[in-house]
Length: 219
Image (cartoon, rainbow, N blue to C red; front, side, top):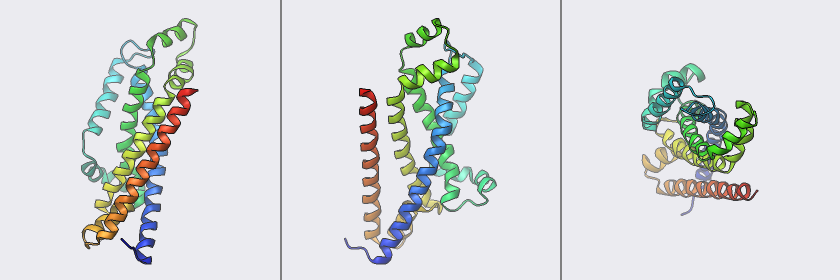
């Protein structure tokens, strides 16, 4: 498989677009998803900030968002995307549905990680008079940190997949390149190059995440 200079330039441009989409969305996903996951834990029945109606309401919103397949979801939120960005096409526009779809996933992953922290540790902190804020920041998050690193790794890999699907509606990036040239124009070399590059990026992200988890677990 040999790519022409023009094809290499297109591949480079698409790779940078994918990197831009995934990087920006990852930052927004972590900033929104982890706090939401913390709320889903501490407002559970029997936890430090128990609030049944809020927990059920947040859980319903998270579950409803996650139940919609991403190709349908990205079309569904087009009016919101246009309201925020001014357009529904392009790499910047795709960040809106990517963030909305990924941060609820991050919230559930965060919830799972925090629930693995032994409740006895939380009770011990409460018995020593620690406030809810200190329990969250000094007990729950530090204890669950290796799991949170793996959760972020899973979220990044999911975002890479989602960004590729966004190419179906002109979202840019490697997915758009594979569809426009690899599928519609039958350029199989472009298709193979895109697939190989995506697989390599996912493997690299997974390796980095696994290495960080091992490092922080030992600490």
